[in-house]
Image (cartoon, rainbow, N blue to C red; front, side, top):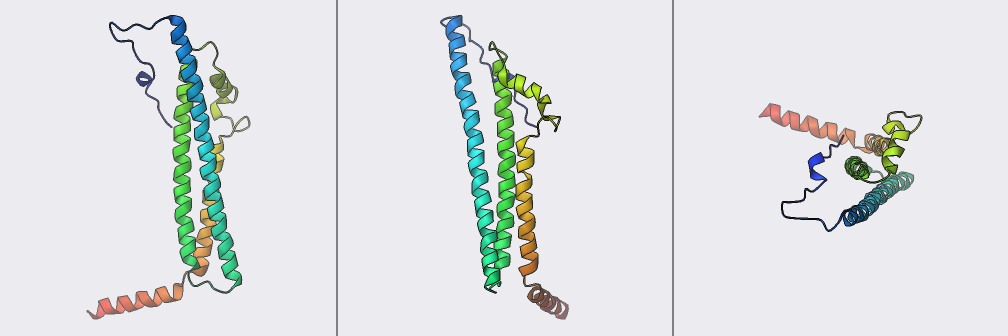
Amino acid sequence: MVDVPKGKLWNEIQEGQTYPSNEKWYSHLLDQYKLYVEMADRISQRRTTANTYFLSVNSAILAFVGYLTSKESSDYMWLLALAGCMLTLFWYNIINSYRNLNTAKWQVVQDIEKRLPISPYDAEWDAVQRGKNPKLYRPISHIESWVPGVFCLLHIIVFCKTFPWGGFINWFNVVGACISAA
């Protein structure tokens, strides 16, 4: 969970500094609020773009592995599987990073709403019991974080089926014999 420091959101008016009027203050607050909500929405769009990219790359890797399997050329498919596993780990970390960033941004939005006449995002979040009741709402990030795991499992299966275990065991035995002879 992300904690947004409460003392960082609101700027205090310094001694000797005045705001032109209460009306201007609220106008500026509303303008900043609209811009901030738009930026929070853009983070969600970037997150979707990142997910699409990783989904496409992982699908392409598995499709290429399938193609190579049909051609009986599987000498180095385990390297593709290893690369796929690494990509899914990166993907999973990016999902978590976006989840934390989105959580922080929407907490800030809710804090700003406390100074506005209405609080639609906070009310919406209350209506779905703040994500605690999966019958009402299941956070998408919890679901989307399973997708890299599914791809990683598929890559692990490919790795286990295509890694040259015999050669590895022979190499290990040779190294062990050299060490024991020394």
